[in-house]
Amino acid sequence: MPKYDVTKLMYVRSESDRLINKLDVDDYRVALMKAARTKVRNAIKTAFTAAKTNETYMARMNAAERTAFINIEPRFWPQGSLAYGTQNMPSHTPPQQIDVDDGVYLPIEALRDKPIVLKQVFFEIVDTALKELAVLENWGFDDQKSTCVRVELDAVTHLDVPLYAIPIERFDELQKAMGRAVLSREAVTDDGDINLRALLGEQKVYLALRERPHWKESDPIRIQEWFEGEQKIFGSIFTRTCRYLKAWRDFNWFKGGPSSIALMICVWETFNDRKTKFYTDSEALLAVARELPARLEAGVKNPVAPEETVFPRDLDDIEFNSIIRQTTLFSEDIRTSLESGTSRLGVVETMIKHWGTRVPHRADWVVSASSATAAVVTSTPAEPQPKPEIETMRSGTEFRSG
Image (cartoon, rainbow, N blue to C red):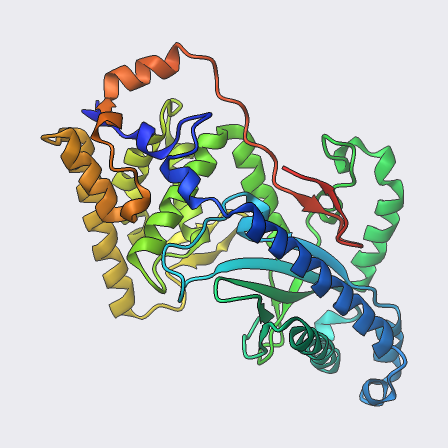
């Protein structure tokens, strides 16, 4: 049994001055991101419509590619932390930025034959459209990313637009399923809206890469669906713990460190391996911190594609070992502080050491672990985590807000 509980420093329902509140992105910036995303989607849809009568593009394609291209209508799906409900305000801005990811999904024929021309045309259409939009909106523009196009809304926020392809035969099935969706309880959300993730099911989705290989099998919708399923199982304490770990990473690494998805998977593994529920945020954080170094060192796999290594990925030995050392120090500090700390003030100072001054300097909010757990067990259960906003793939029109 730990000695201290720091939940009151991190989260108290109905209070707005705890660590979790300091991580929230303000309403103004959320509105800015949504408005920018709508403009980006509209620019891409308009560009694809115009490109179908552009002879310069058409001359580069064979007959089959032209037929496929003329029938393409882009779809959109938000992904990443905004979709998961795990988005934080960065700790160091700049260089850190809020990352908004919005995938463009395109039906395309004969992926097995590597339609390189179509991929190049796709990037050119999106690059040109967003470059022109960036000039109009006074945004930054970056077309040097391997997997996406990026527009920088300001010094704090950027929007990444990766391009995905759905095989045309599977897309036809999707289109037919959309027509039947209202008849299928499986494909309808709690609010009665079409759930296109359910319709995609196990269909393969491919990410376009600027260089070779030209296409990579990658389906962010599957990992999002998995994560949201775990949120329903473990509740809002699971989501908050993921956000605490991401905030710790952002405070300790101006750039780099364990990826967000790797940290989220490590949190999930700890929750999943637990035989009893976590009653407090402090209890969950301690368990995750205790196990984090070993989980990272052993390697983190994608839970929906176990053959894929999420961490370490694209790291050399020096960077990998540095991350493990930093994570081990974090683990030892949290364990020592919460399990055998000598003072409440010392516990607060340890928290500030690893999360910065967004942790309230309130030693009186550090309590004994036994009393904290007892209070939660006898209290009214917390309200479930609000669902993150989801939009339709077709138009991007918002039909639910969390």
